[in-house]
Image (cartoon, rainbow, N blue to C red):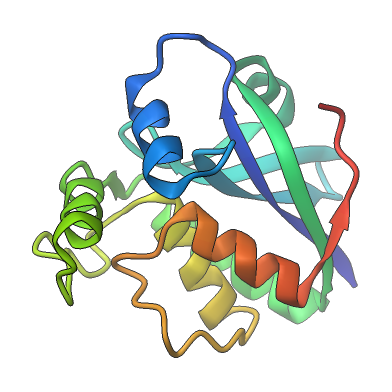
Length: 171
């Protein structure tokens, strides 16, 4: 068995208008969601995320230099599921970050649209969509009422509260 965590963070820098907009729209103290995994063979913690221009892995120290983790939820995963996750994560690393999709999510919230006008399937990702897809495809979490093209960090947070145990983080 392996342990993974889903975390929620915000940038350490002050002038981060994209983060401000997400936190304001979602009414949360965090604007970002990620998956944390430990590589036993390399003895290092890795952050898997959609951030900046693409989907990527980042070392925990570099991540912590730029982001402040507010919440984490830890869970165990079988070795086979871990391998499935890592294969999926590596295959999707380097995929584009969806610049238009957050605008579509904003339009949905403002105008009560039923779907994201900037739906891009699996061509590009935002952080909450990436983690949501992981929860559905690798963990078998049932989220029938959530469209992954419009899922926000708060939706992932609520799922984590329902399915996983919170762990203490140094705030």
